[in-house]
Length: 167
Image (tube, rainbow, N blue to C red; front, side, top):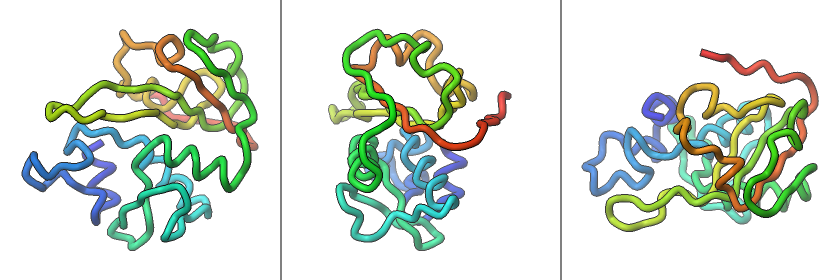
């Protein structure tokens, strides 16, 4: 998370600010949408300014980055239509998504920050047909299975084959 914020830089890097001003959670803050914005941007899908449905920040590269999962999802739905697979309700079987490649979104709330604000209200990540990026890289807590606690999830299919690194 820290490395990603520093790599993007600009307003996305809140890690050097006093803790009261670390609006993205500082070094341990949630970064899935910064990561997805970066991936979209470098695959040719730039986020315009103003971005419909999204509040954005400018990175050191002077391009825009989203940081809220629900807004990112609304933006993609607005520009690309509904997801290929969508399931509402808790405890969704991972098998419904197995073997399909794309990016997965979870309608999930991650609790509160120390000052009482909601930390994050969603999670979006690359999906390789078996697992998603945060699981592979040990970012997600092993005791919290997103498929059991999310209020819904969706998958947008991507062409090709995913080869996410496993560390």
